[in-house]
Length: 107
Image 1 (cartoon, rainbow, N blue to C red):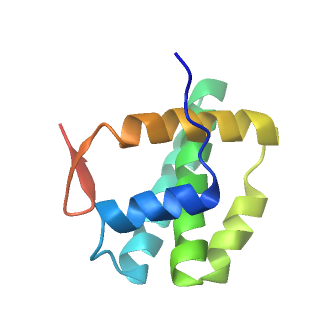
Image 2: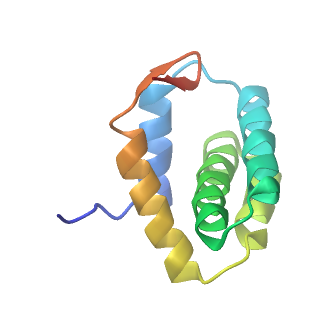
């Protein structure tokens, strides 16, 4: 099974269509939540998965809303770029299959 490679523009397009009413403030809160989960993760696998979430949230904040903090967070994320981008692709594969309500996925 081949996983789609997600460019920043692809992530923003998906975000706009999935969360058309999401505000920059809501996205900043999402980024803060994801950064906290990254900080609290304990294993390398968890760190990588949470780094992908931070990258996705930061990309949207930067590219959809023009918030420079998003760009700074994308640059700050530690780890090998190829590993993080692979984790982003895997996470977006999951995200696109989820049901969403009020900017949160529902079980």
